[in-house]
Image (cartoon, rainbow, N blue to C red):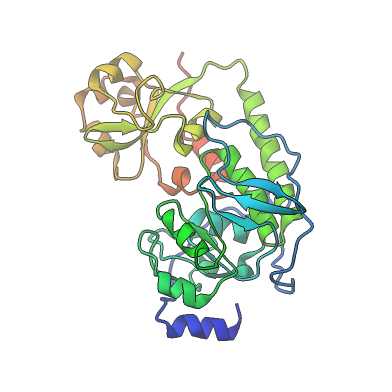
Length: 345
């Protein structure tokens, strides 16, 4: 970001986060990668990278294909999101990113110097020491359109909690896309496109190739094993769970878990005490509004009568481990694998 633009953002009253957070997330060096910031790259230039990567990754759940796709229009290629917003496929120099997962992914690819502003976040966005210094344009649900327009970005990446904002920006001549990966496979597809939009296409394709191989290996390691039976819930009164059509449900699939929410109705169905006793989950994980294991244990006596309750296989999982669609989520899955109980005897 130029000094002139940063001064303009501050003059508009856009908050600069002072931070004070620390977040120890593994870096991409774990996979043998050390992407460098391309501060000397020419912003806004066209990119020759128009094709997709060849890495094969496990399929996501039904209906969870990437919400971004490449569309050939004559000699040009555009990126189109699920709402029909489209931007030319090229490198963008000054980007406002309102989706935390996209911020983390862009920084992981070495393109953090392209981000000129983001949103306030109660939970730190990695790398916290860098993102805490970025100007903000409000919160995810309450973004200042005036500040966005005055900042005059080349591109805005919008959070799915505020999807209409992309269309409003596009109508004012500012390219915008809604970032909403619905599966782990979709996160990798978005990572590849984010690389092309920030002149990090080769780095992104290498990351996707390596992570895709790790996921494939995880699937091979599970072959022949009897799956654990589990639930990922986000409220206790009533008990509601994530089905496999959600990102959290897709994570259970990658962990080799039989998601006991799937036979129920809806994307986030209600789990009745009768069904809980019949299904007898090996473990129950809680997130979002649930703050402690007691929130789950005290929700219904039926919980204590399941294997999960009898053997204390109940845990609270930080929401970012299942909700923040970041390339770091692939590392979080490894951490979740270590929390799984032993198979049934």
